[in-house]
Length: 126
Image (cartoon, rainbow, N blue to C red; front, side):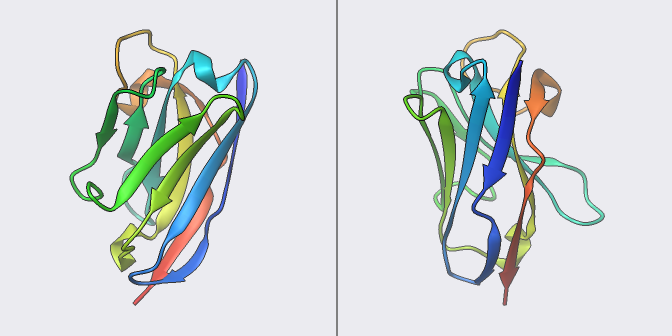
């Protein structure tokens, strides 16, 4: 069992940056590949980024590639999402999740993630 808590969301102007954090407690986050997902009002939840247990493999949605960076610090039991060059379309609730389906690498499928945080709101104004 692992408990995930996101933080770092807020209101930012277009072109600005935010860094989201996901702190894990219980079983260490290092035991899992980790992912970030987001859900905008009236839309389906979508994949943003994921990172393997080792941190070597990282995957990004096409819409954020080159602007967002996922990283992990297992000593701090924390996963980060650095978001740069933010756009109004990045506005959403952002969730971190732990991949519980045992497979190599890091998945983009939310059905492979069994533990979820409560989410943090990111709002980008134009």
